[in-house]
Length: 228
Image (cartoon, one colour):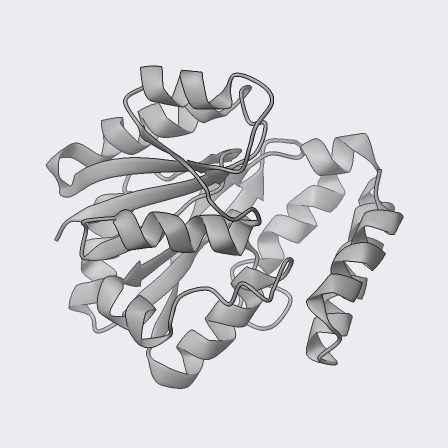
C-alpha cells in the first residue's frame, strides 16, 4: 500500500510544517509523497511546506475541492489521504488505513477531538464517533482508494463548501465506509475567534441547507455571514 497525503492550503504558515512533519514521521515508507496544494497563500505557507519536504503545487483553480482534485491527479499512491493543515494526524494512520482496507473498507475517516479542554467542545468531539450527516467534516481527514476516487470523479468542484459531505454521501452509495475509532486532533481556532454557540449555529445552518439541496454558493455566503 502506497499512500499520497494531500493537504489543501491557504495561509497556513502557522501549522503546515507540523502536519507535513507528522505525515512523514508516522508514514514511514508507506507514504510516498506529501502534496501541499496551495490556493494562492500570501504568507510563507509554500516555502515552509517545501522546506519540510513536501511537494508544493500551485492550484490552477482555487477552492478546496479543486485543490484536492488537482493533488489527486498528480498523486502516485494507490490510497489518497486528504488532511487539513490544522489537523494533527494520528500516529497510527498507516496501520489504521491498511487494516481498514484489509477489512473491505474502501474509504473512511477518523473521529476527532479539539486541542482545547472546553466542555462544550468535548461534546462536539464525542459526537464524531457516530456516523450521520452531522459528522462528515473534512477535519476528520479522509482516506480513499484511488480506484474508488476515480469512479466517483473526485470531489465535485461545484461544492465551494460542504465538498466533504458530498463525497462521503456518494462514497456510501457505492462502497463500505468506516469511522476509525481513534482521534485526530483538530484546532479550536474557529471557536476561539467566534464562540461555541455562533459556530454551532453556522455549522447547523450549513448542514441543513446542504440536506435541502440549497446551492453551495448560497450555503457559503450564509456561512460567512454567521462567522467572523
